[in-house]
Image (tube, rainbow, N blue to C red; front, side):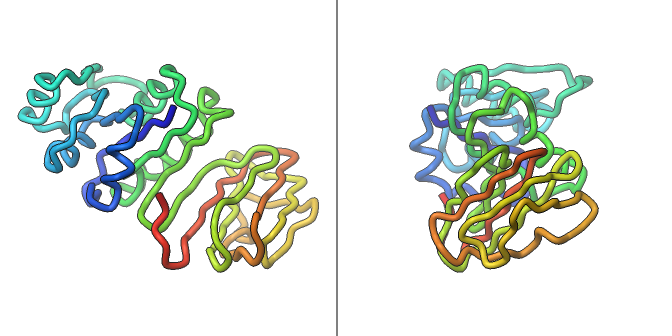
Length: 216
């Protein structure tokens, strides 16, 4: 099952992703992410969060259309996006695309990236997605989707990543180490497909910037 989560990003636009949103098996609005859906005439299956950012008219319309609304206290330990990711995992989503996770406040954007490491998401294909960029975690051996010429950056998360071997990238790595505080893994390029990366210890954030083709 494929879930799509819309986070509350001030600059998020529905139209580039309308087809993806309409084809989702499970469409989740993380609080104010529902405002963009409402404006575009789309109804999520689930609205989740403290609902401090969701317009009242959107909440009323979603409830009338049969959406499930899970309201949490404002004083809680999880962000609305974390609750949405956990809800998607609890509903057995195997693929989860998150829209609108970056581009707003820096603290929230960095936290949203870190959420990819939630243990509940391990074994699922989870992406932070924009029109021409995507980010996801690599544990073990991971194929890197993309076309020749796409920019690939490999960023260690939660400490150093070791035993890194790449395939199909211009700057090849062989049993290498990448460190959190160093920029060595930035701006590699796919030169041959299929590209892949193997991580023996730790986790890598894979960021792909597409060469002129929308990522969906």
